[in-house]
Amino acid sequence: MQLSGRGVSCVRGEREVFSGLDFEAGSGEAVAVVGRNGSGKTSLLRLIAGLLIPAGGTIALDGGDAELTLPEQCHYLGHRDALKPALSVAENLTFWADFLGGERFDTGKGLATVGLDHAADLPAAFLSAGQRRRLSLARLLTVRRPVWLLDEPTTALDVAGQDMFSGLMRGHLARGGLIVAATHAPLGIDSRELRIGGAA
Ligand SMILES: Nc1ncnc2c1ncn2[C@@H]1O[C@H](COP(=O)(O)OP(=O)(O)OP(=O)(O)O)[C@@H](O)[C@H]1O
Image (cartoon, rainbow, N blue to C red; front, top):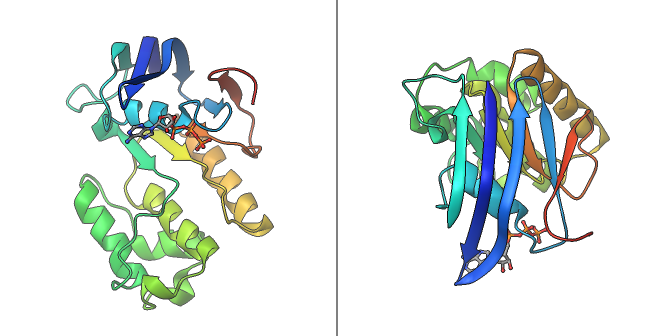
């Protein structure tokens, strides 16, 4: 499986954010997208996820599921945790599993892996910032998708949470998945750097 971008350009609000960007990520590989604030890291993830349309160039996944589009094979975890505060932790995860569709894995096991099984019945509104992030990460485990697009994934995670997340990423890569992560902090796993814009 190979994700590739060729000559990708991004325009937002009639302003060119970047242009002529080439990138590659293969099975088992993590790419860390780095660059100064506003250089377009989030925009690149959203382009790959199909949430924005490139102003130029192409983005393609070769060797994936021919029946599915690239966005259907991606998990996109934005830097804001997309949680419904009135639903419980377990209900939030079930909501996402229903919404994303496809083969679903044990939500209880997913919560246990991210250390939230004790909080399954708690309304998401009561979670701390790090717990909200852990719940978002549980989505990655509940519905398996080969391409993980992660925006500042370690934000708010404590040291144990970062270790847990590094293990999840390594497991995903070992199963042949790939990761593209926008980050200002070390990702915690071996990764290739993709720099956008000038030096940060
Ligand atoms: N909805 C929008 N309309 C217009 N411009 C936007 C919009 N969203 C983002 N931008 C602009 O696009 C540029 C790239 O934003 P983006 O969020 O991709 O940067 P980033 O590299 O992820 O930044 P950061 O490191 O601060 O998270 C910025 O100049 C931003 O102001």
